Amino acid sequence: MNGHPTRPEDFDLYALGVLEGEEKAAIESHVPTCAECATRLAEARGRIGLLAFSAPRVEPSPTVRERLMRQIHASVEGAEAQRAQREPERAGGFFGRWWAAVLVPACILLLFVAARLRNENERLSRELAQEQATLQQQQKQLDEALHAQALLESKDTVSVALAQQPGMPKGDVRVMYNSKMGMAMCDGWVEPAPANKSYQLWLVPKDGKPISAGVIDGGPINPWTVKLPQGMAAKAFAVTLEPAGGMPQPTGPMVLVGPVT
Ligand SMILES: [Zn+2]
Image 1 (cartoon, helix red, strand yellow):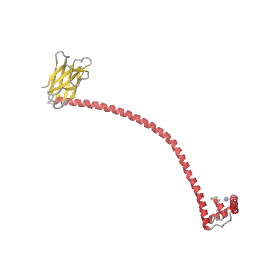
Image 2 (tube, rainbow, N blue to C red):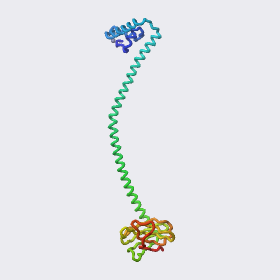
Image 3 (cartoon, rainbow, N blue to C red):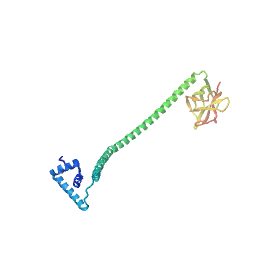
Image 4 (spheres, protein in one colour):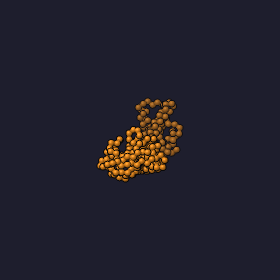
């Protein structure tokens, strides 16, 4: 064993005479071959010598000696353990900074991506809403066409011709009405309505108040179907001239009227 003693306290322990076994043998075999360690041992002997002068020299009992050595070794090992613990901490700090250097740009990138995705999502949502609106419109048109077809094919549907009333705007309107289905369809034409006025179609029941079947613009009528209460006993259909947009109940003069037979 020619290496320097690994524990610096071994010199003091040797000088104190408490080093034993392999450690003692190691010092004794190494020191004569190493000037540096010889100097360190001399220094240790000097320190111990001073201690000897300052306190009465007592030969420590084996128990005390053992405890002393354990304490010295423990404190040295403790210091070494602390140092070893600080190393990973420093490494952790380094890794923390290293991760931050990667994570910060990554987070910024993610924010950009998230913002882009949000914009894209909003755009798609708008497009989807438009698609849905178009689809609903188409569905409504399809429903109307199907209703019109069902109305025209039904044996229960009656055709009501509305006759022009004396002194009133000219028009020729026909209503296809099905009481069981609760549905009517209107087509024909009426003279353009005066300013701020609308024509309004009414179902006049045998009992009760007229029920609005919709507002008619002047000119050729785009045929449309309208839902009405089912099973009504209708007396007539009539068109009146009302304030623009129509009224809940008829207020104006009767322009066209036709009995339901
Ligand atoms: Zn040495």
